[in-house]
Image (cartoon, rainbow, N blue to C red):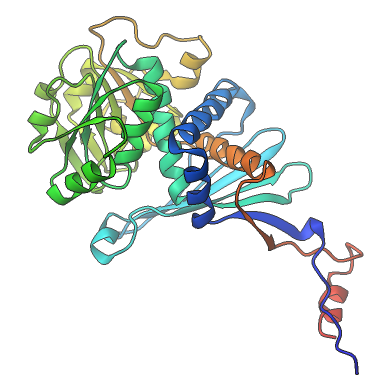
Length: 353
């Protein structure tokens, strides 16, 4: 008998897949500053068409160990979601605190058009979003950023603010000196002046921008009221779930607060410390020119960042464009594609030959 060749999947069954290795190749081939700048452009464009999106707070499953979340959104053409976890204890066990993957699909037929890792991509989109917001809210001519928490996000944030806002100095502080040493080592050759600090009070000295990015899932006060002077911009990205904060409540009362999606931020952000109804400004309105951002040199602006699905949608949309232009990827046989759409059983039966 002549051996039969298994039927090859059709073009319609193949879905582009961007692995961690592919993502690292893309970043290194294009250059991280180029990627951050291009990502920020896509995020900004999508924020400016905010009313076109379906919006819902992320679906979270909390446990004593951490949280697992789904973050969905859609416009008229595409649906996207991200699966992401947050497990602060993981680092001690040799695992990443945060891992993620995402899918972008066609609204027209429901078929996935991209599957991508999003652990690296989330770090990139979070940094790009932070620095994009900094363009609107940071003091004019800001040159120095203080970085509380020198873990996995730290270097991405520093390079993004250098690329988009123009800082030239980053001051580092972490309760674990090894994390600060790691970040300083990774930022060598970045063009940034790196200053390692031994306390929270020291790290904020002379900083026009303060970024807080810690991992512990608890009500914390790593930034106290006396550490924040007039005129600074606070990029608060660590508080991102119920029961987790980084800033003293009094700082919030002195600041003009800017958020992504209020129904989600009220549950997860720094503003969970405030009474509902406290004045907030949505960032999409600032980017569309419908609300004020920074008004004067003495204003304290606070980006209460929790991460929203539209940012992940933008990131997936960016990667899909790169893949169509030849960026590294693989093709996965993910979708059943029988000759007759009604004959799924027959397709399975014939595969046994």
